[in-house]
Length: 127
Image (cartoon, rainbow, N blue to C red):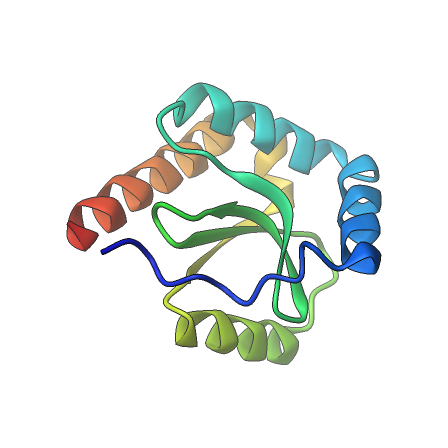
């Protein structure tokens, strides 16, 4: 049995437009991370700025039920906790990556390797 469908609002025109807008406005850290994901995790498909319920996930892999959030300097820890709890209730693990780390090639590589390992682990656990 595959993963449970998420409450996506992707078909909602306003959400579709908002997701497109977020993709176009991607910062350098998100762009760098997205390119790295494609190279490091070619066997996994990640959606960028994917709407789930009331939230837009920076990166989402449905096969692994994994959300990767690239966090900038300004973040509301309480809001993040509520969001992470909501996603956890849907079976989605949230992995947070500080955007400042993505400017350093070694830290970027370490985060990409960690995401790949999480995907492999979560997919094998689901089988």
